[in-house]
Image (cartoon, rainbow, N blue to C red; front, side, top):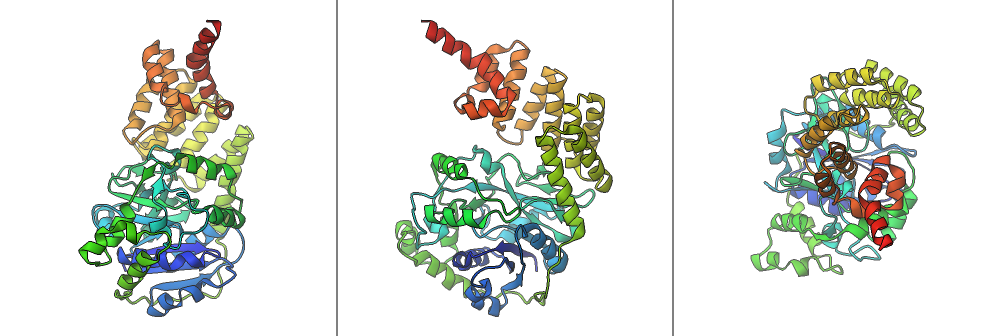
Length: 468
């Protein structure tokens, strides 16, 4: 096989058939589904797909098992599929240059993975689950500039992967890496949003009722609950109507022209019309033969356990400002995975906090040799140049980062401050203008750069106004 998808789910039976039919119509050839202790076994819901040979279902038990399911899929089933994508039941791949995902991937075979930027959709006013399904029911998303849309999900070549490191990203073998649609290197789960050729529709909140159910289930990788402010923030910012997935799947259903043009009827929230058409069209496609079988028991990979423990410990220690201990963790990870660029940048950041600038630069230089012009390395260099007050280099580095897409708000703040420190006050004000509305009390408390922007560019204006 050329392309399959991997999914872990708990009690999401109602979403599976639409998710399967949609991706079958776009060329996916098999599905590896891990049932994480669902009340009603997932296999009962999709028995017809399993019987036809589309799906291999495994049972996986316990909380926070997502990455162990992904690892098992890579190790056990990677030999059966050239590419495996790792997404959730609320995520739908939307290729824009061809309706066949396999055909799209042909241009990326020289790379170990393809990272798809997620576009986050809100509830669209639905209090309860729309009968029409996810694709038809949720049509309003956040603009591409929203920070959440920088998250990626990955389609990888299993033979070139070492381990999963998050639900979004993977550790690749030496000299292998993931790219985005423009073939820009991606080293983390976060990358500037580029969705001209392909996007991942993420129906993140679904309806109000479904969000409550999602909160109860918790996150698949950690088991921790979702925060209420995630719902509020996303639904406040969903302003863009996006019909790309709807139009794409309608084109694959072989409808009469008049019916295909009547998108309003096909997406009626109280109708199953589009779901029925998808099911009928997908039912005409036969899957390729797959000899893979479910296993009796899935055991945790000790190597993955240790890696995840160290990554979590490193982040916690940085959060607690225990930079010496965090640096030791990242030094250990560099020894274990000397080809992992992100460990050099993590190590460098701890050195910067410890004012060990020479060691920080050596780590960043090594990362640059391994991954020239990598976005994450540029970000680390940006922090380094700011720490040593080389503001000219901060500005240059930010502009290089901007080549990959719009800057994150914190990077915009850094660029504006660098321009200010060089005496380019008008230019700094213009740069900062786009983030000024975001300088809430919470933002000011979160990072000193935001507070500095406020003190330099907002507070004086307020004081002048008050004095009048």
